[in-house]
Amino acid sequence: MLVLILASFFRNPSHPFCFGVTLAKLAAVTIDENDVETFVTSGALDKLHKSLQLDSFSIYHDSDTGPWTLEKRWDEMTSKEWSEMFELSIKGKIQHKYLLHPVAGLMKYHRCGKREKRDSKTPFQKASLVLDQVSIAVSEDQYRDGIQLLEGVSRYRIRMEFSLFRPMIPVLVDAKAWWRYAGRAVTQQQRKSRCNFSWENLSRASGLRKKYVDLYVSGLQQGKFDNFEIRQIDRELDVEVNLLWRMLAHAKVETAKLKEAAAAREKSRKSTWWPFGGSGAGPRASVAQGPETEAAPAQLTKEEWNKINELLSYQPGQDYPLLSTQEPQNMLQTMLDVTIKQSLACIKDSTDLVILCGTFSNLNVSLKLFPKTFFCDTKLTYYGLSSPEGPLVSSVSREGRAQALDLTFVYVPFEEHLDWKLSVTMSSCYVTVWRSSFDRVMHFMKSGQAMSPTVALETAVALQTKLEEVTRRAQERILSQLEKQRRFSIDIDLDAPKVLIPALKDEGIGKKSQLLVDLGHFNLRTLGNDDVEFLKRSRYTKLHVSGRDISAFLC
Image (tube, rainbow, N blue to C red; front, side, top):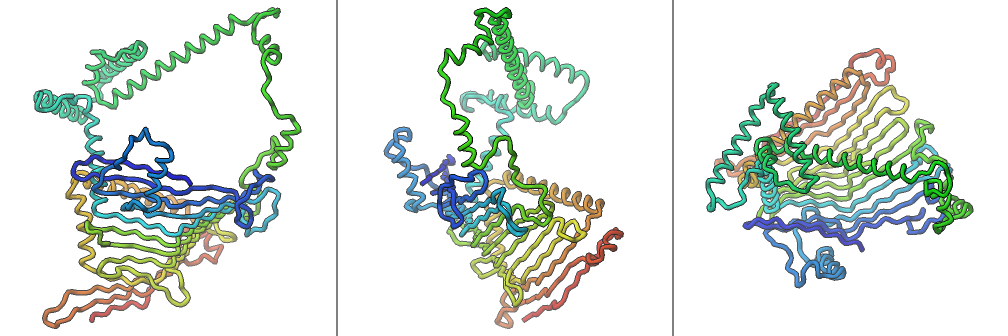
């Protein structure tokens, strides 16, 4: 059994926490065609069957708790005592609050032999991954600890810029030193905001760099770094510039060492070389005398190497590329199949009440790779979202449409004059709008902002920057596709949601009113894909959008 526990303790006096990872088993074995573990002695580098098993992989986060109390010191414990202590978490004898609940899965890999005959539907290599259940849960306390940890990292990052000026004594001992520290930090910030790239400043910076690198190189060679001039330059320049110049000094010292070593080797070679033969201890003599004066290591004979190569189905000098480039275009080369039977993601308040829970079942993603074509097929049986008030989103199936989502993407489809093709079929879902559920989620999110406004602002800025970058790249990609006049086909068949909005209780009527909106059915598809001549000469793409069965009820 492989046991792995990683734990850390964040020293927050008011809310300490422990974080850890558990892994009970991660094993890779060779199997036969019947999925039975075996030992292969023939064709080990040709035909291949492998199985990878994952058991009890989890991530936990225990809020308001300290490190383990042990009877012995860590360095005095034996390996058996370590295993017994860590296995308590894996076996469930120690209760944890999991971010990722224990996950078990199985992965199988199959690769055909080079000489094995196969048809177009049989892949050369295939991998399948099955995960039973993936559950993720975040509580309000865990969210608070994460925000506090990010706040500590943010403070450390800001402090690092001015750590060179930071006094090593408490404030009460020397308050003037801390005021000078604050003044230097503000001065450095202002100097960075007023960068003046004049010729005078550039010339001065070049002279400082040469002086600083020479002084630091001298310090590295002598092992002394207590240099007043270096400290003065460090105080004047930014930390990033100081680090860059120190890296240049280290590189200069390493280059000098390499040159000295090369010169020493050259000198040794010239001093030991005797060009007129005789009994000189030169390279030729050492080569000639080596096998006689030193015991030759035991080596395999040619017959033994041939026997090993025969067992491994390997011939020296023969190249074995994974995928052949000379196969027909419809020959399946690689196939990857991923299945998640059940998945759950939820957030909890401070009382461990689940305020929002999302789930889906039977997610299957299948990827197929041909010499020029790529297939991606995604199927989802059910998805939903719930709260203490009841279901918020719940998918439904109907006759002729058993999957909640069925998506197929093809890049360079066979026998079609298209660059890519997309087909999406989605079943309807019931959506219920609960005001109290929305308020709970907003309270959960605002709790972190109240604890650390700085981190909340940095996160918002980072998300906005990332969103702008993604939007810009998407626009560039769309414009690029339009300029290249890519031919594509889209077929989206959508059973739109049915939305229920409960209203507040009417005091005059004495009952609640409800608004039910049925968004009906929508279809989006391209036209003219069957006309090859139209695709070749047309510079535009025709899209057909239709909607029907839209209604609303107030009761």
